[in-house]
Image (cartoon, rainbow, N blue to C red; front, side, top):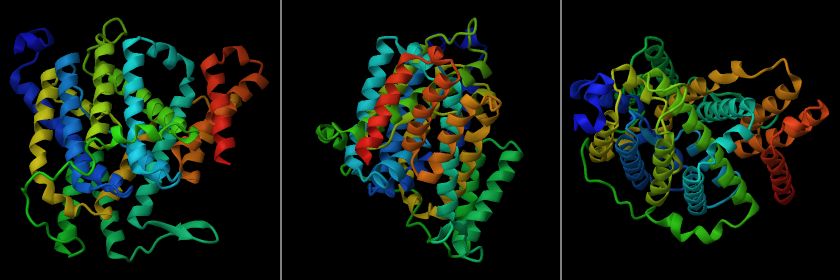
Length: 431
């Protein structure tokens, strides 16, 4: 085992790798309860989504560990699950079954472009500023949803939004959860988000704002409500709306994964001459996990930046991922706890994830207006139109125009011009 993963070469041991795997799991265990809550809003069975989430995370992380030998864990991605529910299903009116088919297709396309080794071309085609803008916009979108679910922000017919009722018990619980997680994060507590959720749920039960669970350990829920649905609805995705949905799933997953891989590998000293060894295998693991997850019944599965907590604990090889995968399988037994994970418990998580995602705002060249305008439009349109796809579409339309006016049209990749026309058609057909 140590020879397969290269323990000696990476200066690690079974003990270090086990602790690292457990640390990574605790840092991202919140997804087991947050993902069913978000996809449940799309009308999906929460029990089935819980199982699909755990299995997709376990299988994807195991493939990453064994195939690519990296201490990087995968699970259904935050942002992508919000896009799935609140943009695709609730705003665009696409059934969740068809949306799952879109996730499946995006995963298959990801596999193809990985095997054909054309990922570099796609990465280079989209300007870095728009990648940063998309990540930041998704962060604001997620945080906005969290503020709504918490009751901190509510509807106002005159101004669209207003401050919610801060005397409401559930809202106060969400505020408590937010402050708790912030304190954990500021103190650098590994798994702070997960521990914050646990503490918030306990406080909620103490004050009878959350019902007591029927148990802690129970039977694994059935996958039947979601298993294989994506395959059954493949014939429903041949529309302009679904083309945009698939492109968005692919775009966000592609760059989220690439960014996470580079960040975690750099932190662990795994880069070789500024290049990521076995990058193709890592991307293949990610894309395969998306396909598997969609068939099981969950939104796009992607690499998690929380893997950096495991690397900080000493994880250097794929055995860390194997351990993390084992804990995700073990978590299948704890489905009765789903009942205590109310919106007041999950809302703070969405807000905190939003904070983490907008961190790249400072990397955008705001002094260049030809960059600033499309970047800002991308960012602001996501929460204000309640659609990640709309934000990306508007940014991708405006960018080639500003670059042409600036006299730098030749610097725009042909793929970006193709996207310009695709998104123009998207708005025409949407109208």
